[in-house]
Image (cartoon, rainbow over all chains, first blue to last red; front, top):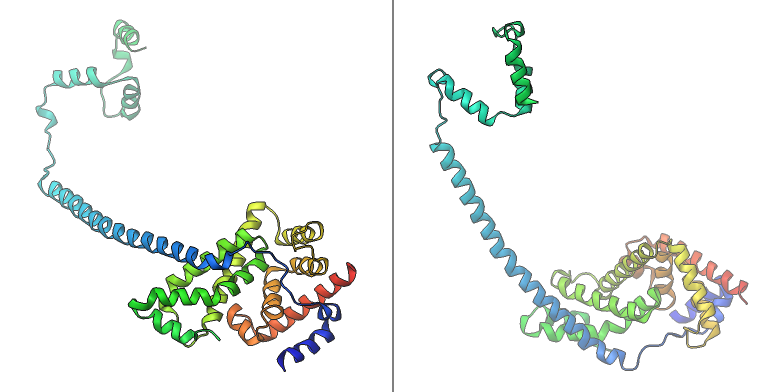
Length: 143
Length: 182
């Protein structure tokens, strides 16, 4: 009944289409469907193997990551608890040592930075108190 | 009459008969799934890849399949989604719209002997190729697989009314194409 009913439905709606014979015109390689099952099963088996491998790897990587994190947190905590910030009494450091340190480690950009940070109100450096020879020596050395 | 779906599912649920059940499932549905894919993507190699992908997905998800749904509807849904995704990727790869792709396929039918030299069928398939993807799926399920609207509705998640409208539109387009190319 169904196919007859469908035919009528087709004829009304699309007579050219209804007249056409319903057949499969595509070609398939010989023996394709006979081999398809085993090919699918092979593919499923390799997918299963891949799945079980990927199930193992995340397990140990998760544990390893957790262990690393715990160790890192432990070390940080330990260092923070035991580390005492050294307090420096600048007044006790001899002036010559400071000068030597600055001579050794200061470069042009630091000099500029020091000048920028210098508050003329709080210093007793006056450019007019520097003699020309010292100024010339400084410029010769630094520029 | 082959083995019942319920029997396959029952066997699949037991570890000792799982592989046997899957083998039975492939035997029962491989051709239907292949032809659904083949009519959508046309090329045999593409259809072959797709049918394998579909069964891998079925294997992975069959444990979670709810027995109150139809097994073949569920498999058809997986296959339909795979085909639509494949066509979408193909479109992106070729930097072309699906409409253009469909017309290229339609031209292919007109100029090449891809359909075993059958000119009348070539016209029909050329007409089908011009349909939008979802309309093409609906037409194939209704015309070739002779599924009911209710079944297609379950597979594609579209209302029966919407399906009827799509199918009628598809049939009209095909009819026009056949008339114009007489």
